[in-house]
Length: 186
Image (tube, rainbow, N blue to C red):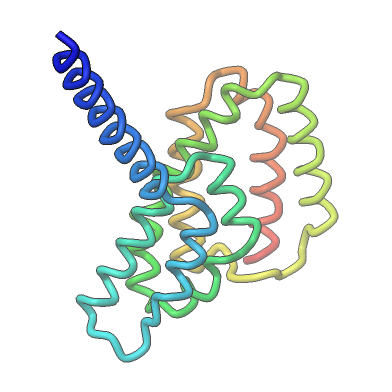
């Protein structure tokens, strides 16, 4: 009887060790803003074949798409992808945007839908005020840049399909200000 208990304890311990190992492995396999920054630093694109560049691009896009909204926002604000993105050819940039924009805008609309109305209104006020301050400034590529057009198109598509009616009403002043600012770029 005693050997049966020992065998059962050993089997149970083995199961727990395997489960613990799988949990640790899953935690380390999940991308983080830091792991994406490290990955981008390792991706030297110069001198690589087109196929290798595309694999690197898709790997970074997959990692970025696996982040949650707050992590993705952290990556965007830290500007850790800027150098990588600038090293891409225009065709590669378009492909990267095709791979990452839909999930990014979907996450953003989900975050807006979950946000408390007062917090959302404060966000819109702050964003509109910032845009008014910068109205007419040329800070980057204008709306005639195909990538800017792609971002605007995807953002509006996501806005109209994924945002709740309440969110659409709350964000209307922001959309209007964006249109005014974009008209100043032409």
